[in-house]
Length: 332
Image (cartoon, rainbow, N blue to C red; front, top):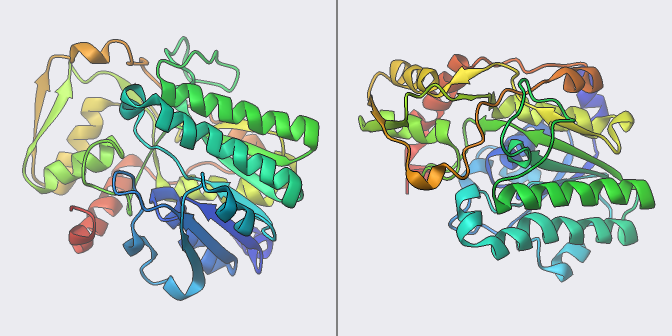
């Protein structure tokens, strides 16, 4: 996209949580566009940061190992950047139930600290925040548009929703140029593969590559919206390059409904190994299951004049190919 090259050449971009799935994908794209990229990542072992994700662009980025909750560090990196993308997060919605205060601290308070520092030290920066489909809670109607009620079922969704509200408040009261992108189910290369909490498509790919059993809850008819990470990165880049997205909130997904069993069958077919087993729903899932989810991408297409390009089959194929060459960097 020529317009992105013009928008980001020599632009100073700060990626918080920049060594994870989406952050590192953005780093590769931004370096290729000629941006000046700074990354902050705490590299907590239970989350997704991985230095191997910068393979090939190590000399094109500046990396600080540190925590978004460290205000002294944040004060040193926030000034001087044209665009700040906050991808630093506690990534597991199930862990947010068992440790809600950690989730609150990183996913909500961390965003508030960033906004306040931007207000004081860098009020001209464009600030992008990744919300989540889990903000909506149980789905009442599909496809899910931006005005769908938000009644989150777990702390992760509550804290994402609160952080989004802070972004809107800082835009309304202080004029910060904030944008929230509520993400569906991202997957793709550079995601950690140590356990299933990072993302279910990637985890199923690992299970299939190891010839293991993929367990499907119920009949697998539940519907999800899976979006390839490079398409996610494009939405961030477009949103960060356009003044008219300031103050906006919009849903980001492929817009394509896929049942759980269909996704799993695609994984097994493309990898050529693994098998499916249908098992009863765990009792503790009844309180957090949202129901079918498909993104209404109408506003995304209107605001960005673009739609996701990668089919689920192609995305699985690309992800599998990546890990076939690099599994040792992600398995352990």
